[in-house]
Length: 214
Ligand SMILES: *Cc1c(COP(=O)(O)O)cnc(C)c1O
Image 1 (spheres, protein in one colour):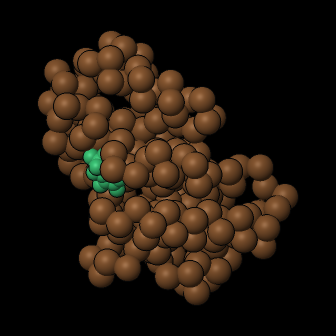
Image 2 (cartoon, rainbow, N blue to C red):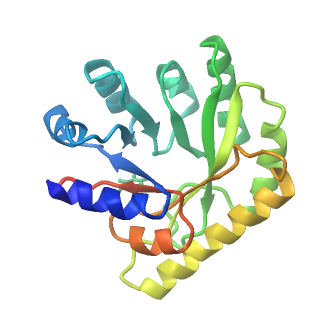
């Protein structure tokens, strides 16, 4: 379990944040990381996220990293720290509404699709301008940056190219929409298989699961 500390050091040295992806892991497994100081955890299912939030220490910051349906936003709105996976205006509007009901502002990332695989959620670049413009008027949402995933492939050149594309989009959006907004600062990219490349390419947040729990 010194795996966590090694990875943590490695991530911290770049100034990025380590999100420990705890989906499908038991509370006992999560507590092993918690006891070593990890406080930021990511889940991809709403029900599992809510269950763990209710049962586990309250100083954990919970991130939702998986696809989110509008009708489930209300369950996580009271406590979620960051939603990585916003991919439509309708979803952003629902998060805004539920955040207002809970008298809070919810941090979000907009999920961008760069991977060539067909199965991934996320927006194409041309949809991004539209969503970012619409989101600006929503007072109970704060856009912190973008999230993306590279293709799941052993071809490291392809992975690097896709991660570079995410960084290029991030920089362009920062300049076109958020040049005056210091809150737009996060580029969530990198998982167990590609986090080293992601950190080299400018990730500020890596989402690592399997590597931490083996
Ligand atoms: C599962 C998951 C991860 C972590 O994947 P590992 O390969 O286990 O590190 C990261 N991001 C998302 C969106 C995930 O669903």
